[in-house]
Length: 496
Image (cartoon, rainbow, N blue to C red; front, side, top):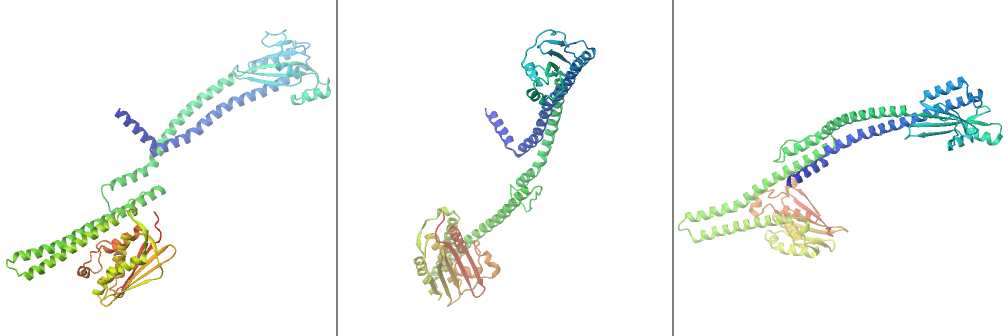
């Protein structure tokens, strides 16, 4: 049972494959016209051959009818010339010729079996009314032609009936010439053509199958190269750029794949750097604590003041370790989707006042002046916790990386769609070539100064993630030695 299911699955895969579909399309594109042409040619041959035979026999019959009047054959059916013509016509078309007089009596039968008999049929009646009648019996394989024998000058049958109606006895129908001819030779020729067409169709089918298989393999080859190239990098990232430019579509696929690979290389490098930085940042406080503890252990009778000093240093390192871990946890939460946002309507003016109240002691300690300027009252749909963390990081960084007796200015504004928070400072600034790296995790412009003020290098990464989760944007501009300005732009309404 399992084997049968696998076979069905394999068959389904074959049917769904692009190669199989290309093969089917090429095969149908070649065979459908061939089949149509075959049936058209064989079918039209029979129709055309019967039409030509009917026309020929009708013409011969009309000529013979004129000869019958000329030689007065209806009264004296012994003319050797007419009898010879009748036999010749009968033999030529492998048929039978009957001559019927006005009394519906057969006066001549080339088969010699109906002479003297009366013949009554619809075709004969129609012919005595001036019509030339033709009939094709496909099943019986014969054509029947019935033409009138007229005494006056021969008229084309399409005008004969009209002439009879207008002139009465001027044109008199003396009898009927009935000719039955065989179509066996037409049928035989048609069968020969049909057999040849079958052979040709089979040959074309074999050739088309071969062409379809070859073209399907050729056309699918670039796709296989794309698959092989992808399989080569499936186990890891290579530094080579993949190129399959056979088709515009494969070129687009490879371009997209190369971009994905490039992005994955960047992410892989970023991950390695992040792990390295996390390891280093977490290891540094632990190393400091171990050094301090070992120093105390090496001194058997260390004074109490030294113990207090070292324990205070160990406490600071523990707080620093805790800060790093807290920031890492915050960053992990920020990496989640926007569906984790706890959206509510928040008065941004009140929120800014609360943030500044919390940061004022830090600013006073560094003698930094905090300036808050609100252009209008702003209420927005945001996650209060995440936005508070983001704005707090911006303002706290502006305080920490400032100059003595400096200032930090916070400006709040809004339009009909966004609210904007601009944080400017008079601090140390950021070199222009480093601005694009400031949102990277653990990145510091001045590592020595950051270590003094307790920075972890995660603040701006957390801020940026929080703003992006709200579908906002943040940009920075700076002049080294003069100060930095961060501008955060966040939608007033949350779009889920």
